[in-house]
Every structure is written in C-alpha cells, then in structure tokens.
Length: 456
Image (cartoon, rainbow, N blue to C red; front, side, top):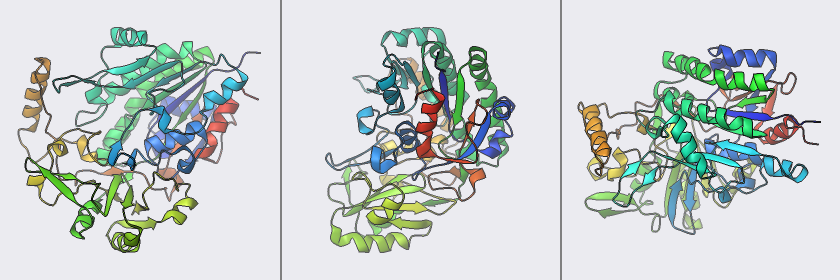
C-alpha cells in the first residue's frame, strides 16, 4: 500500500479573517478541514517552527526565540541557521524509523543548515572578503543550487526582507517547491509574504487584504499540483499579526537605571553584554532579560514591571507554565501589552547609534527590528540613495545600505504574545476532510503530520 505524500506550507501570518480574501485556499478548506491553532510563547518563527517539527515546547527544543544571548560566547545572535541548535527528534526522523527511505525537502523553513533532509533550500547571502554582500541561497545537494538559479534566477534576497520586501521572494520559494515536491515524500515550504504589509500597515488595512489575495494567487499553482498528483496538503501559520501602536524601549530603560552598559568605537555605541548587569534581547512582543547577578533580579523585575507597555514579567517558575523555562531563556521574560512591542534600541542619542542601526542587519542587531521594513520617511532622498547603492553593488563596489529609520513609530503590526481572540491567531487548513477541527495546539502538529503521512 502506497503511503500518502505530504506538502506542509507554513503561510506565516494566516488567520481566519485573512482566509476570507483567499478563494483558492478557502476552497481547499471547504473541501477538506480547518481549525484554529494554539501557538506557543513566544509566537515567533524559529520557536513555533521548531515546535511544529518536534512536538516540544521551547523548554524541550531550546529555540526560545528568533535569537537569544549565547552565554558561553558572551554574544547576542539572532537568526542562526544550524539545526543542531534545535533539540528533539524531527518528524521525518521519526517516520524514517519505520520507513528508512522516506525523502524530505525543506524550502526555507528555519534552522535548515545541517538538517537531515534530502533537499534543502535556504537564503544564504554571499559575504565576499572585501565586505560586499550579494543575494544567494544555500542548497543541499550542492548541484541543486545551479538547477534552481538556472531555472528561477538568483534568490531575490532584497524582496525576502527589508524595505523592498515583496511577493517576488515568496513566488521564487513556491516555484522551487513545485520543482522539489515530485521528488519528496514530505515537502516543507515557508511562505513569508503576509509578514510584510501586515507589519507595515496593520492586519485591518487594505494592504493586508491585498497581500492575502496576492499570495493566494501565487500559491494556486502549487496547490493545483498537489491536488492533481494526490499529495495531501497542510497549510498552517505560526502566529497572527495584530495591531501595534506602542514601541517599548526596554534597553533604554535598563540603561537609564544604570544596569545596561555600552562601549564606544568611532563615536558609535555598542551593547556591552559582558559588563551589563541587565539587558534585553527584544523579539517582537517578547523580550528575554538577562540578569548577571541574582541579587539584582528583584530590582530588575520591579523596573520592568513598571515600564509602560509591559503586561507580564515571567521569572523561571512562571516561564515553566508556558514551556519556556530553558537555560537559553532570559532570567526574566517580558510579554508586551496587546498592541505594544519591544525595540532593541539601547543608545540614548541617535547621533551615537551604531552604523548597522540604519541598515538591514538581522545578524548584527542584538534584537529584532521591524523598522527594517521601511525606508526612512525623514530622509527625502532615501530612495535615490538606495538606487545609488544598488548601482555600486552592480559595479562590484563595496556598499552600505543606510536607509532604515531610527523612529519605530511607522510599525503597525506585531506578534509574539498569545492571542486573546482565536480568530486573530494562527490556523490550519488541511485537504483531508475531518483531519482537523476546533483548536489544535502547536505541540500536536507533529503528531498530525505523522498521521497525514500514514505512519503507524
């Protein structure tokens, strides 16, 4: 008896409200089944994807956010890529104990480097020795790179994130998925398009409805391929994006309290985690606060609790109730109010901000920065500067794209905390009737995949 093939599409940001603007996906839901999804805390990409694949909360798999403070290195790192950072048996590894020849393709799910999949595609810029950065992707097997780039063009990195983030990156990912799905028993596809305009404009803006309609049309050929070839489809999302109107400068508060320290180079200030008594790694609506001396813990807790925009301050015992009590987690974890979110900013004078603050620098910033989705509205020549910078790139010259505002107020959408209203949170859609119903915990998605894959 043949086992069913399975396509799992992580359509980040999908909610029941947005589904109404997506006729192709709605048809799949009407013919199959749908449910709301109960996310984990934090409801952010790296944490939720790791839970989907392992069935574990962050306390089990260790991905406590999109990044954290690596205590053994004394450095904050976001968006690391190696799969060894995620503990727990991945869903396909479980299936392979029963079916050793089970083949898997991962197209842009996170922690892809070193993943035990047969086919891997993930964004990976080229970092040249002279400092230039160019768009590209990492693939496994290596020859897959030239096949995809030859057929689809270079990976459109500048539409994957940043001020020019747009649907082209999702279209490239979907096209790559269509090529790999016939070769795989399980195909994982990450589609980021809804992330962009929902954070830029908010979930109720006309741009959000248009983004949903546009990505539905882009997904239609992939869903049609699956329907035609009998592949079971599971479409799910990690979180819903809600209104945002209150940036919370937690690190500036800690600095003014004498707890966070910086060091200075060339007139610019850099976070000094080695000497700071307390600092935060901001990650959307969740912030991990690392406290060097336990004697400072109650002081820091009180300061954080009094900060406008902070809803909860979780110590280790409170983190355990959310499955977030891992050694990588902050000594305290802050959860923002419903429309609030945490900035990473630690400088008190914009003239002292590091040069990376004005660029799209997801690996250098010690926290998440949604302002990277915008061109600086205060700089009237910003798009001209961006064009000149791209001209330098095309000429093979070094360049720095300094176009990001230091004012976070344009951000209109956020996520990370648990939703109070399930209709504003994530959901699942499955091509199999009766497969899902009601509300499904994120920790149960792995078992759902096992059932859909036909394992015993």
